[in-house]
Image (cartoon, rainbow, N blue to C red; front, side, top):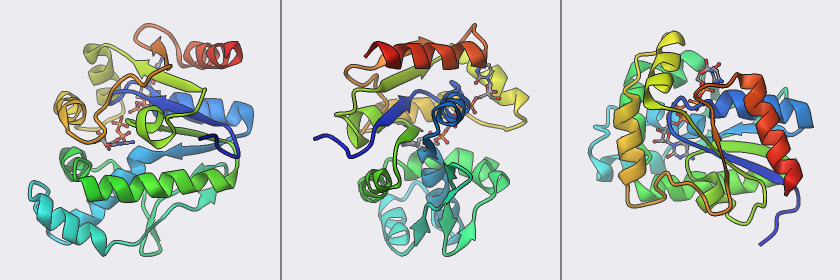
Length: 213
Ligand code: CDP
Ligand code: CDP
């Protein structure tokens, strides 16, 4: 199924550089940048606020059903709003959210709901959308798929330099092993190893890979 506008899909493990690369590619091409991790983070923030144990899938499902989430576009990228509150970077990347987000993201009803919201964003125009299942599940027919990887040591050290306490190995384990929409290299994706290159070089590799297709 083709989409009315092109979608560049960028997937990869935690702290591989997806957001930084996606933002720069979107700026360069004049596309809208969508960070789907922030949608899962916002749901997690709201679930935790309602005092739900993120390990309890039934409780997460019930709480999530009552959460109103919107993704308005501001200056070329989507924000995430819950009940009209725009979440801040500090809220989205807080320690409790980092610890709980992969537990909330493995609940099938949460995924179905957010995948539908992500697909609907195509009405905005051309997109660069990054996450874990964008090329495999959300837009599997896109001809423009990238998978960004980097060694675990490099990813842990870059995330540490951002000042976040983040159990990236544990999140990767949960994201790769979950039953629904696990993190995989999507069929047809170009893999970029972002361990030992600069961000500018990674962006050049993405642009070059897309032009080849
Ligand atoms: O930025 P980082 O790679 O650390 O994480 P993120 O992209 O903000 O995603 C946070 C979490 O949301 C991931 O660890 C996944 O559990 C979940 N996620 C997902 O399941 N599917 C997506 N398309 C995006 C994120
Ligand atoms: O979105 P994701 O969690 O995959 O990664 P990110 O938050 O975009 O990147 C993690 C950190 O690595 C950021 O501070 C980037 O500036 C930095 N970085 C990078 O992504 N790629 C490089 N080649 C060099 C640094």
